[in-house]
Amino acid sequence: MNAAAPRINKIVYVKLLLMAVFWGGTFIAGKIVAQRVGPYSAAFLRFAIASVFLCLTAIKMEGHLPALRLRHLFPIFLLGMTGVFAYNVFFFKGLKLIEASRAAIIIANNPIFIALFSALLFREQLTPTRLTGILISIGGAVLVITRGDLHMIASGAVGWGELFILGCVASWVTFSLLGKLLLAELSPLASVLYAALSGAVCLAVPAWQEGILTAWTSYTVTDWGALFYLGFFGTVLGFVWYYQGIQRIGPTKAGVFINFVPVSAIVFSFFFLHEPLTLSLLFGAVLVLTGVYLTNRAARKRHPG
Image (cartoon, rainbow, N blue to C red; front, side, top):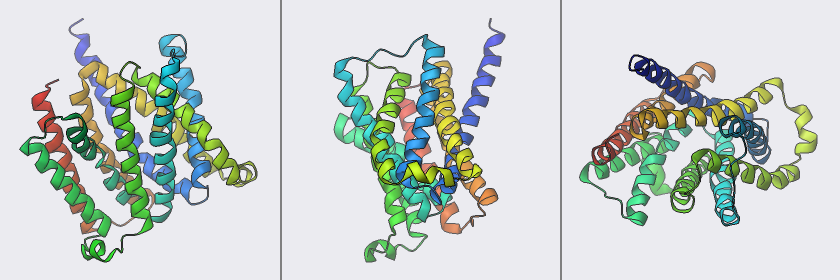
């Protein structure tokens, strides 16, 4: 039994690394989809696909769909509106306008703002190390957003694409804080499953108004492949493997692999989308990853795992 444990952990580490690769790939797939598919239609199709596979995963893992009580409905609706509806509409709108690599670095600040608002709202300790990490990471994001020209902020010249991606950050931080506050009694799988279903249902009407019923016939094989990638690999498989990692090696060690997401996104963007590797992008990425590392390192000292 002891001899099998290291082998199991190796498999978990491989899955977590692949998870980071899958999540990094969502920016490339999203960029492809955003060019021809409307944001509401893209978000709806992504989570319609994801919902089907999440239901099948829940049935396989638990033998049935997770139980849901009446008091869970409104929190689930809020999670669907923030983490699914708002996040993905901003995601596709933003990727239509800016490079996938820059979007990935901006969104990599999610844990930074979650830590900041957790300190403000839940009075979680904000140590000097965590505060330093937050400031460094935000500085990196500003560098990426402005492409190294900080006068853009003072002159109000930041583009809509960057603002949409910042909307992703705001949506995900709200989703994460609401989940921590409202749904502690539901399993992560149940929360994501029902949030995905709720978000997909809410997206159906805007997608219909956007013309999905006639437009879907014009989607290319590449569009459908990218949508399937987003729904299955980027949402279902990445999520399941991430939480398997948390169960096997703990949230602290599993969370380290999140740092590889923007790295894989930058690499994929360079090779598949031929996006340039500018100094502001690379230096900003280093600052963001350093800030996230310092913030998580401070958390690990408080909650070793």
